[in-house]
Image 1 (cartoon, rainbow, N blue to C red):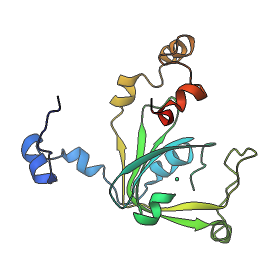
Image 2: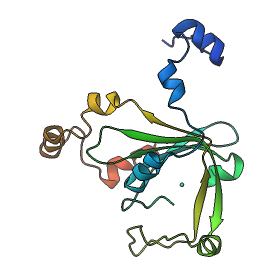
Image 3: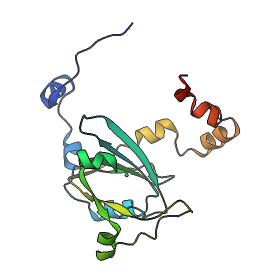
Length: 182
């Protein structure tokens, strides 16, 4: 049985049900990266980038590298808007550089601007052919409760998951099963 509900559409309907954002939430929204945010991003080895295609279908892609690797690509051609959330392992704080515009830039353009790409950990399958230039429109920190509630950085939880994985180990057979109609 599928339940149908009217979606909450627009700020006024949302605010009518839940109230307007708090003053604190409004004040933390910046149109640029503050020095602290720049420091956070330069120390983050992991970011999740979300984008949407022309039809509004979203895609969130994890990106990782050595801290500071940030200086994903198909959706950018049809809709340049992206959202980024940066993580530093062990820190309960996250940082968003959200509602920005991304554009694909060539390696030649990066070289011309002296943007160093050597911060990535490369392997035999890695080459730097292009990058993303993000024009930040909004920047803000997120509440750390999600990381606390998920125990994402909790050492005991990590050790327990290593000793007794909560999911079966990925194999080609179970990973690609959906292609066989499973």
